Length: 387
Image: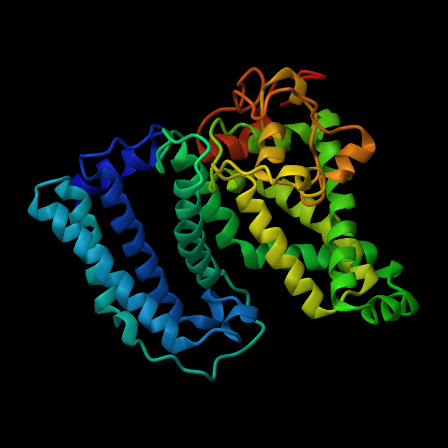
């Protein structure tokens, strides 16, 4: 790809502003992103043992994945062609066509997959990243447009590039994170596993076990989350997550990788010790995955009296607020009644907060700066003010 194309792509990736409509930039970014995903998808077909997630590749239909790849190539090419014909940001269309051409040269959607590859190899979850990005974008952008809280907030709002970088890294490294978490859980908490307790838990009714796993995980999440706010050393990590000034489906991805590993280890430990069945754990993963995205989304959802029981976008938006009455409040991830029980629920006459982000706005913009922030920040956090 020639340097004249790389330079504007680099500037676009490093900027922090919203994309203005009418110039073809938003549609161009969509097409370019699709072309990247298509190229990565072709690579995953070539090297499934290293680039796909073992649990996923056992459950999805390869023929369906081929069709998804084919139509993604068509859509990306169609958008790029439209922008090219109407002379809108030709450099972005050229970059898109270059990646589409490279994907096609490597075999496109018709790549043969040798099913006899070795199991147990180290892997990067490209398939999880691709499917999660496509699925989350399609579902949650639609929901945000249908039930928007802040209707003037564009899809590509300010700082979307930073959150997209966090999304890429945290989802690409899902294999490493899961491996690290599994090792830590077994190393630190393996001694606590008890066959009697595990037998009792596995004998529970599915719905009772599902409620119990969510409750146990959320109690640990509450304690861990509260520690991130009240222990200055941990706040250095967690402040990165709170630095987002706009709430949408992408904002929840802004999380330091060290915090991600610590939190997942602590939350998964009791789940491992108690011995929940695979079906219950799978259902829990679906619930936590949906709520993690939905509760950060730009949606006007409160759920009436149920908001005192279940964590909603309204409940979690208050947690990200700079408003004085919201500081160090609303820690729960699933059950709002936990915060009401411990006296840490927000009490406000207003329905929604006014501003988001860290009070004092001292966390820098940009993925790499935020990755280094906990280790380079010279000043201690405001003792009672983290948002």
